[in-house]
Image (cartoon, rainbow, N blue to C red; front, top):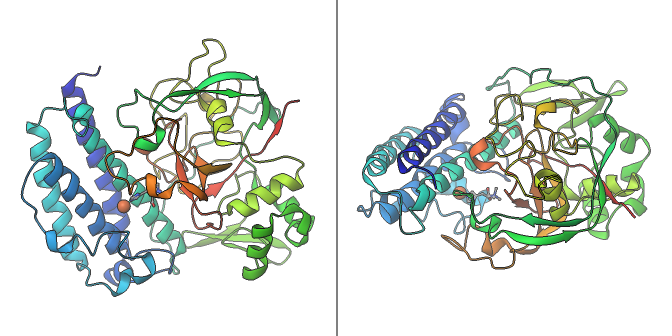
Length: 434
Ligand code: AVJ
Ligand code: FE
């Protein structure tokens, strides 16, 4: 068990880190850009901002702190289930200055509660869970807001240095063999793990091979050049119908000009870098590429075994490199760099068997539907995970360059519809070992 004072500082730091990111994402553009809807797929940035504050008010001020509601009349405006994204611009949203004042006011009271409360006892406060959950919620919306920034037209508003050159120059094998046998999936001990990551349970995973790195733009270009988007046999029926209906022939944000592929990224157009992991592909495209390559997407349990299983001890670890928290030389996380690092980077983040870049860079599509683990219990609210379980959503693993470390670990599960491409989604492939 961790010292409650350490947890208190950790919770405070997680909340402050999230708020700094939120601040950057909502002050780097002018007011009209905060209230505009840049894509019908996304909320106006100012909706995300006040929604962050409203969730914090509901969980930390009211549920944990037992304080009176600050602005109960806005709960419904910022309820994601009541209002789909497309209709959010027409709601009576708080104006940017009002929204800023609101989140600031909530945060002041929350930090006061955090200083006084005992972080032990009821599940909501034990180990500071609710504070960790709300920091993770804010960071998830910070990723959502970064997606909105990527969809926004016009000159760059955000800049960041490229990832450092961390590649060790090793000639990497194309794939790594993960031996068959049992492993422990999920967690019952990670204090801030969300309900869908729980509980820890055993799975028997047969031997399989998995790509050493995520699939690169260069490899994906070969799929395109080979006529991949025009060949029915690589696609599922739904995937084929989807690319026909929308006329898709390349990842989102790519365009062909003068015999080469260009892509727009955060307001800047550049040639597609062949060594970088491909990003902004739907599950359908990832699945079709894998079939074209004579392979398949990994299942979710294969992905987690590749990322967490230590063949020496037989134990599942928090990250590919062990139990230590992420660090800048282990993974590309936290919007420090606004792009994935070239395949083969981050040797210090490799798994014991040599799989690289499982954490950070790009979210990785798996073949699995988003389903509850045996023994799952919805906590603290059904709308976080439970209402999304079923065949409609596919699981993504590992986090992207846009994800903060507080929302990234070997057990963390993300999910989305198979048509989604505006998210920072890439993939790696696998095959049976037999
Ligand atoms: C887990 C990323 C799918 O953004 O819809 C944010 C996270 N849940 N607010 C989403 C979430 C409630 C969720 N994802
Ligand atoms: Fe939310």
